[in-house]
Image 1 (cartoon, rainbow, N blue to C red):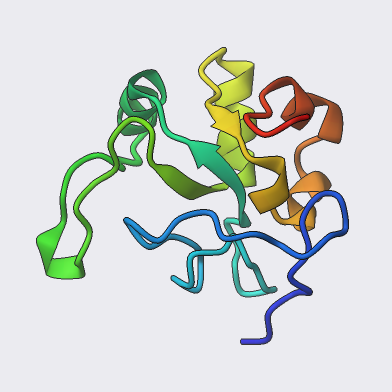
Image 2 (image 1 turned 45 degrees about the vertical axis):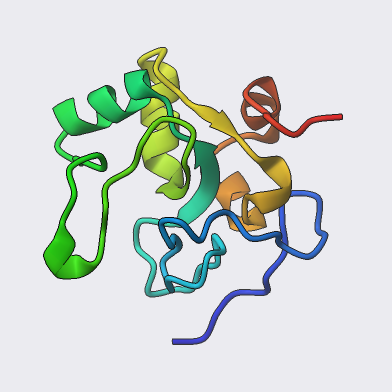
Length: 125
């Protein structure tokens, strides 16, 4: 699998999203992507209890530990590379978590408009 260029929404080098737990399609801590990443795991979020409950309700339980896969489960405050379409779905349901723009891959902009991401930016200066 060949990674897309590792750039954030500002066309700057992508910054690591999270390593505890380790995140990303490639499990490299970054929201890198490639053509095989059909879910586009490109939006770096700051998990909230509200979003984790919403995601579980929608069939993607991110908070339950899966020790057999080395996954302790997400807690509020954890960073995670989320599928861009899932973030947009959460936004449309008024449940979107904050995002880190410097840690969000630029390919997320193919699905989520920058204006929406900026509204939820945890790292906007």
